Image (cartoon, rainbow, N blue to C red; front, top):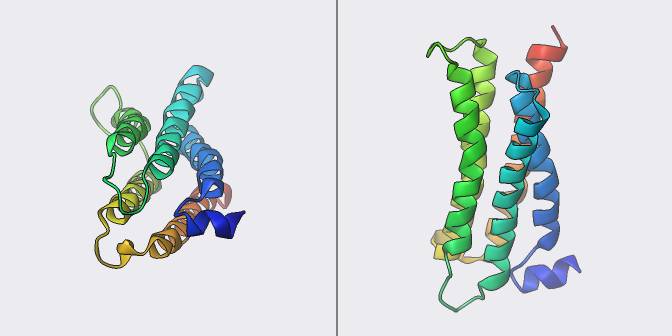
Length: 164
């Protein structure tokens, strides 16, 4: 169960939940930007899910006290970067001039930062830097990041699209 996995410094439940929720978040962000092509949305979803699954592999293959195999982390960073490159290109547009209201930039920048903080949290955990040397500290950071990122996206979308 959950507590047994935490004792082994793993949490598959987190990775399953993230593969669904963060992928939904990327799709929602893309749709706010006007991306509606199903093939493009599936590509963004696939790249994002791959990022999460590489994070899960990172956790499964690395054991406490053993040398860290960083390849899954870096592969996840590459896969996870793809949706953001696409979104930044889409926001700039073919004219080279941004054509979106300020709140869209707010969503893009704030969620880009949040998504990268997840990677930073994992990097700090596996480097064992400071409080991150305690696996459970990193786990708590994941929980706070997850709740905060989802809340930020929900409020930015609600406050600027649904309320007006």
